[in-house]
Length: 217
Image (spheres, rainbow, N blue to C red):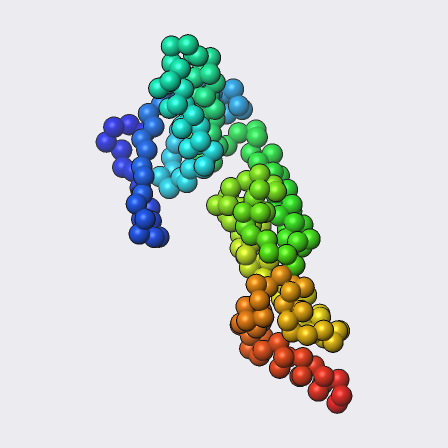
């Protein structure tokens, strides 16, 4: 962008303070990096609503640290971080390159890993952070790509797995409501009952009684 260009800043959803960072880059340097990673033609940023990743912020913090503490003795590290930030800027701005297809494949692979992790461990007290730590991505990125490929949030998928298993146990076993809540990963019986009623419009106990009545008829 050039001085005077309009910048779109999204209003935060919560009342916590926001921090804004201005990054000025050299056009020729960015063009050179763009070509090296598979870009074609003149580089142009046309989107105003780009969301930047935590990886970019990490790179900026690392660069600031190096400049403030080691600028005169470690120029190689500074140059390396400059390259890293430039590439991340291009990625975050949905820069189209020969690597685009690989990025989409990586997204699908990460979603597949997240789904597999959830389906394996939903019965324990897993969190979104646990999933992200397992596949090495940020919570915000997981939310975005999971919603894109699965159609619901990771949390809803976790709850869906728990709900489906609970229905199976209610139908096919005689274990108590408390035991079912524990086996399916709910915090406690109250959490299980509330979540179940939201989906089925009846409590787990009533659902079980209705199943038995239908079987007897």
